[in-house]
Image (cartoon, rainbow over all chains, first blue to last red; front, side, top):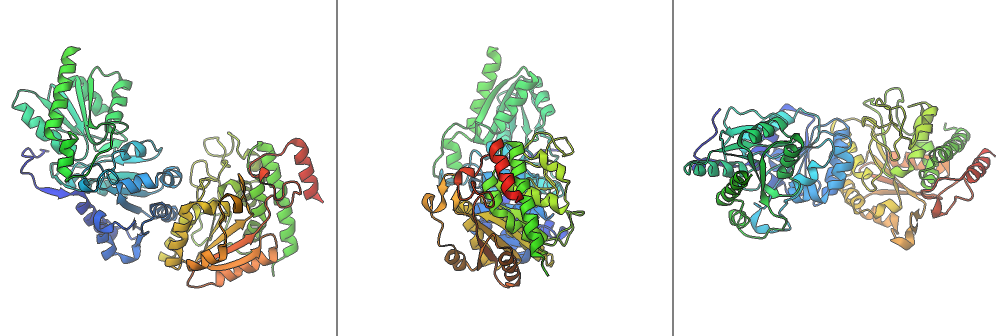
Amino acid sequence: MMAVTDIKNAPKKALRDTYGEMLVKLGKEDPDMVVLDADLSESTKTHKFHITFPDRFFNAGIAEQNMLGLSAGFAYTGRTVYASSFAIFLSGRAWEIIRQQIAYNGLNVKLVASHGGVSVGQDGASHQMNEDIAIMRALPNMNVIVPADSVEMEKVLEKVHYMKEPFYIRMGREKFPVIMPVDYEFELGKGFLLKEGDDVSVIACGVMVSIALQAAYELEEEGISVEVVNMASIKPIDRELIKQTATKTGAVVTSEEHSVIGGLGSAVSEVLSEEGCNAVLVRHGIEDRFALSGPAWEVMDELGLSVSGLKSKIRQALSKKCQK
Amino acid sequence: MVDFDRLEKIARELRKEIINMVYNAQSGHPGGSLSAIDILTVLYFGGVLRYDPNNPDKEDRDRFILSKGHASPALYSVLSYAGYFPREELSTYRKTKGFALDGYSRLQGHPAWQHNKHGAPGVEASTGSLGQGLSVGIGQALSIKLWGKDSRVYVMLGDGEIQEGMVWEAVMFAGHHRVDNLCAILDNNNLQIDGDVREIVNIHPLKEKFEAFGWHVVDIDGHDHKQIYDAFMKAKATKGKPAVIIARTVKGKGVSFMENNFKWHGVAPSREDYERALAELTV
């Protein structure tokens, strides 16, 4: 299996487009499946399911709490349920209903969030969700997945559709470069080694995986050997792979379009400290702050969620490693 | 023919069970359990709810959700009396140990779904955090309709509970979708933890509010079994819209010193109060 190496020229696709297509495909396979949205179906792409299966689609209107209560109701009767909205409203507005109904009872509800992170861009801080991985990860029974591209999104949905458990699956708004090998298979609790390296490991999720690959190839030319791991399955997380790569390189950089508090960086640091790995850690993500309005990739640049931003974190990790 | 004398006797026995459970646990909510118990008695033992305690997952069953989950002593005593689990298990209410597969109690402080590992048979949804049960009930009702089944869903709410905004999202949604296999029951006992509902944040007028959202409203005395039964029949006969039974009730009903006293919302009786309460209910 080969990852795409020419990131700049890789084809791009939005994960939510894949989501919309997959809902229709899964809806044909599974007559008990229902889909809910809260007045954002054109944006989340659940409207594709709505058009194909109007009887099995329910629009709650601008009422996320009720949408998740309804989702639980459907799941209690044995249905497979998909509920979607922007990440901020899906996970934030209705968190306690997710906790009490969906997580506590291990209900078969797939919470698929679009517009996660700051890449919703111009809508600004009110719509940018940078804390969802943290708050969803803390819920017992909840699985948390952040796919890197549309190939992985498709593989994730194929796999989790028939697992009767709660999932939180996070997508960005923008088109992401397609970088995963076509024969890739997603496995819950497993990370994927995209590129081998010796000096430093980058463990990334979501859009930061393609940025990490680009950074790795550029640093290669400077003689720095970077290993890149795609950690889409944040909960459960791949402890073995983290241990392996950290032990091998002795320096880990986590990279995510999420707060450095509570997300992938925290999850990896928990493993490193508990496993007693002898490796330095630098967390690359959104510092403890709110972001701002602007075109998506400009906002990403401002926050350092860019190839150059990640490269400087990688150098920081290397110098920390040398100081040890 | 409904045997109302029998229902009266059952309700009195269940009131004793409620007092026993809360006294035994030295924790729980007697007031709102006693206001709700007549409605639950008629629902489960008056031939209204279709259920089978020997097969709690039976496909064509009706479903009851106690959205005001703190009235769990009322629900547990009813489920036990109906035969879902033995009476002895009631002594595990709010206790650590009990009859779940892992040795812990299935009678959690607030009800847990029957397929939750700490849930009791017959419990159709986990509740306790207020305001969620109606949305859950609507989801179940729509799912049942989508399968073309004729089962009905009943959801009991507290009057203080409807201060939760999520309730009104659900009320609006059910009216819009004309969910007519759904019947909500409002246990309108006028009291919440901090005092009189009308003084804390007034919820009235109720009838006009529900009607404005497209619901059929039935207003009754929530301790009169005949009125409760008739209200359930009217709700069942309502087509094209959801129905709500606004049941005027008395918090602590049946135990004189608990009646209309918000201090008995979530307090367990002392030995002396326990004996007085049982003596009153034994007459």
